[in-house]
Length: 117
Image (cartoon, rainbow, N blue to C red; front, top):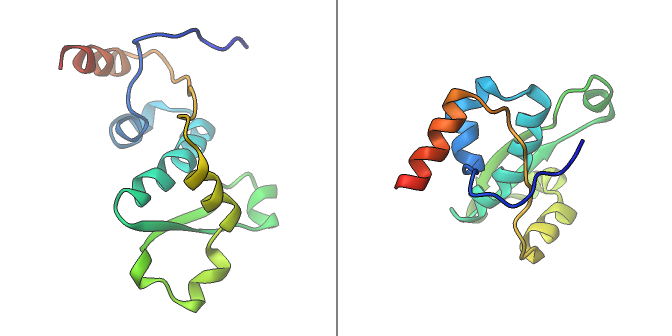
């Protein structure tokens, strides 16, 4: 597999998840969701809580994730707060990716709309 070069042919990850998740391979959708969700939550004053286990991993099931407003966090939430992930996303300055998604008519239309708009 070869990494694509710089291009104007990109779409927003959150848009892709909300509007064309059915066209994304399941593993790519799960990975993209894991990258987009912390940023989406942070912009709304929220953190992402995550329930993961060896059983989920071995069954190839992505961890369960949900958002909680910072002011609503309780001591019961702490086991689900991934401090390493939180630290990573608060320090990161470069965007992640790229995530290569299938070149479908819907993806192509989204790129065209972004470029025109």
